[in-house]
Length: 143
Image (tube, rainbow, N blue to C red):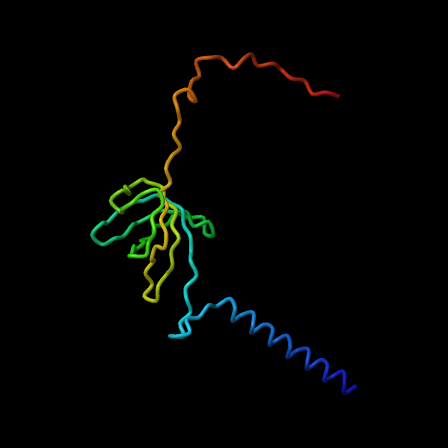
């Protein structure tokens, strides 16, 4: 009976140790300051406002968890990388962007990467509807 109790206590201790080790791996800590580094977040939306002086973007996006449209202000810094454009002046309201960002300790949204989504070029031949597609036929289900 005593060995069963020791076995059960040992098993519980092993579970707690395994859980705490797994938890430590998910929270990356800066060992010099002890701060937990924020995990990157992502959004996809339409630019509402560009402020080149303040280096910010206001973006409208859909919060799918709450099924509502929201706006977010994203700050750019020296480490922000650009995809499909070279400077903040290239972004205009109504442009579509994809942004990877983190929330810093003061609650500011800091952009890590901003991708400007460019509409694909559509040639006029893709839009040509002058030729009929053919006759529509009434299709009967096969038995």
